[in-house]
Length: 212
Ligand SMILES: [Ca+2]
Ligand SMILES: [Ca+2]
Image: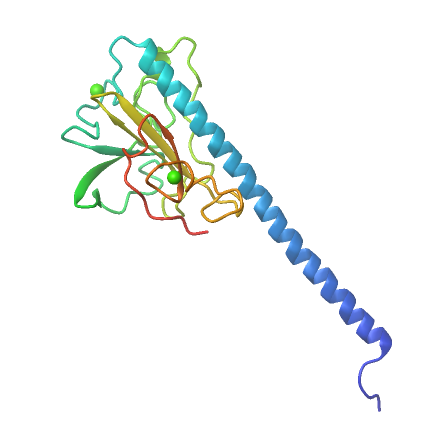
């Protein structure tokens, strides 16, 4: 009868533990790597959208930040509206109005055949096709683009004076809220979990934090 483990058995167990640990560690690293690459796309998209909105506002004689198909959607107008990048058919926004600090906002979602369009029918209803040359051929959206996960882009504007804001949540451990390189709570905006960019960072009220 054998007592305890032999040297070979112990070595084998130790070896297996190391292999399993290594695999788990690699999976975490690969996951983080994908999160970082998605965050880099988000940061880039926001800059591209910011520049596009700025050049549209400056190059057009009568800029209309809710486009030809919608009216009175400015934060300072009757249908104060938050525009979200998730198309209607993919996921319908859970409530008909988003309420924050007793103020209620309409939420606009484009339909799936139009949400990427740059002619005023996209999720940002601005006629970017009027810029010469157009800054992009289709509107950028979040690489995950899911409201239930907390990853989507938001846009809102003010008519008078003309102001706009766009935002995205970041997911990598480094860049998100509380991370070493936290980019979301350090942007001087009013939402600690989202990266905000624009000419007024208080137009969009804070949204629920993403589930990591
Ligand atoms: Ca309009
Ligand atoms: Ca922020």
